[in-house]
Amino acid sequence: MTQTAIPDKESSQALGIHVDSLIRHFGAVKAVDGITFDAPAGAVTALIGPNGSGKTTLLLILAGLLAPDSGEASVAGLDVVHDARARGRIGWMPDVFGTWDALTCLEILTIFGQAYGMNKKHAVAKAAELLERSYLDEFASLPARVLSRGQKQRLGLARALVHDPDVLLLDEPASGLDPRSRVDLRDMLRSLAAEGKTVLVSSHVLSELEEVYDHAVFLSQGKTIDTGEPDGNEVRRGWRLEALDPASLRRFLDSADIPYKEGNRTGEVVVSLASYESAAELFKAAVLAGVALYSVAPTSGRLEETYLSLDEERK
Image (cartoon, rainbow, N blue to C red; front, side):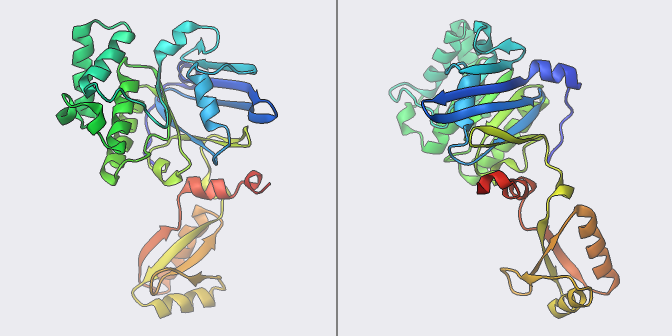
């Protein structure tokens, strides 16, 4: 996980996102049921939960597109419900970005720029800059209908950035992107956070978030069930081990009375360890015992391990 220098706690919270006891029900359905968290400026905060956990409803409220029943929500220090200025500080990217298919990519971004008060010359220049940053400059003069699903996602992110917002709300931004575009998206999000922007990104595909997030907020059944950065020492996780001599590795584990199971690849074994410290001790002991390890890797990322350890998802 890449770390980013961020402002001090007080200023970053004021410039970021603050949510306190937020509630929004649709009849008997408790879509958002008391969510509370802070997402600081200058960082990427991952919003994690299964389908139906309230992620999209929460993002719609933060974007000013849906009124909560009660609770507080602010972005960049502005109340999203009662202060109209808040919308101008937000860049919103829904999970599906609708386009005017007859207009060119340049025209679409220019129109959005003018809607945010830019003069046409400024809006055109900003649109061209964002198309280049999103690797869509070759499509600038082409109608949006020629774009693939992934290219439309990139256009949607460019649209969210056209007015240089302080806060970005991204709902499944990597949906439909190819591997190269996913890497580009990751790099762009890190760059935006380094510029001091608040980035809140929702996804249920945890591998997409693993290398980009600074903080994480976990949701389940409309509630906040864990906030902050997961601590790897609090979660048991699996480790894949491979040695030049697989038999010597198994003899070592047997002699140390460490349970293991066969991995997916020939010669690979998987052990479950309680912390990073216990993993380091095991690897050191194996090497000292003459086991020539050549591959050591966790079976999954920290977000996935933390998510799977949450009891709320089994209720």
